[in-house]
Each structure stands twice: as C-alpha cells, then as structure tokens.
Length: 152
Figure 1 (cartoon, helix red, strand yellow):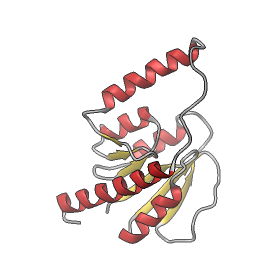
Figure 2 (cartoon, rainbow, N blue to C red):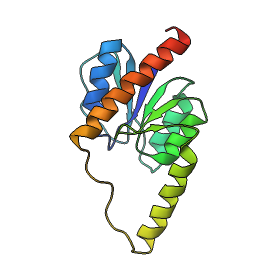
Figure 3 (cartoon, rainbow, N blue to C red):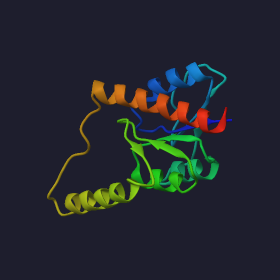
Figure 4 (cartoon, helix red, strand yellow):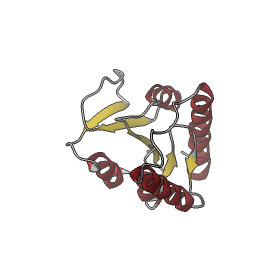
C-alpha cells in the first residue's frame, strides 16, 4: 500500500499532507526527534526516533519502499530515498527526481560552503501561499501518477 513519510520536525506542510492523504485514504507516518500533536486518525502515525542529526533520516530510508512518497526539504535525504525508488517532494512543492537531484546536492554543498565562509547568512525564505498551493498540486499529481502506474 502506498504510504507517505514526512520528515516532520521542521515540516511546514503537515496539514496539507493530512488533507490530501485523507482524501485518498493513504497512511501517513511522521518521523520526528520529539513528540508532536497529530490528528486522531487511524491512518496517521508518529514515529519518535532518538536524538541525532540523521536518526530520523535513517529511519525513513530504512522503512520507505519503492513508490512511497517522502516529504522533506532535506536534499541528502531526498537523494537517499530516490535511490530506493521513492517519490520525493519538498515542502515548497519541488519534486526531486533522478534528473535534478545531482544539481540540488551541488547547490546545497555550495551554499553550505558560502555560509561557512560567512558570505551568506540565514536560511531559506518562509513558505508562501503559492508554495503551499504548489505542494498540494504536486502531492496530488504524484499520488495520481503512482496509482495509474500501479493500478492501486
């Protein structure tokens, strides 16, 4: 069964994931380093993992299967999930694919170097309404594509 995994600690689109998953009756697993409130729904689960920078990422990679969907803004996690044939969507609605993950990783590394050198400060811009709309559209489109491909 198709499942959605959410890298949940800093995910700003959890409500959108719940809404779309409910419409399709898909299981959602939020993976986080600490407890958080989730909807009282049999299809929504919270997996609290230990503290550590990659513990949640490792849990997701260990449990994700081909054609599952992962929601994350972590480019390195996206890369690892794509290697397991999962579909990956950033919280801004960007779809990560085999064709664009290499440049995304390179850009991430370059920006990390610039931040380390003091050339750049701050993080990504706050999520805008259009980003949420793009995310909703992309999630719906990915689910429809998987269902068509696998007749789910």
